[in-house]
Length: 96
Image (cartoon, rainbow, N blue to C red):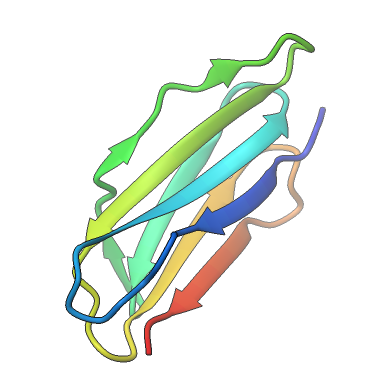
């Protein structure tokens, strides 16, 4: 069992500009993984979650994208759940 490495990526998060926030999970095994997004504490639906892709070494990668127009002090969190984790991994960003 391999635990995912999780990153939250956005080129730029600017208030009032449409933004894609990408949560990536890489190099995990087994394949099953889930993403959950919250915006200022409320669950939200991702714009897109990719099919899990297999790497040449047998591990897997997956992405989830949340598309939104931030307002001041928006707090976005991506939570990743995988059986290799003792507790979900969370990555967050706050829009200024």
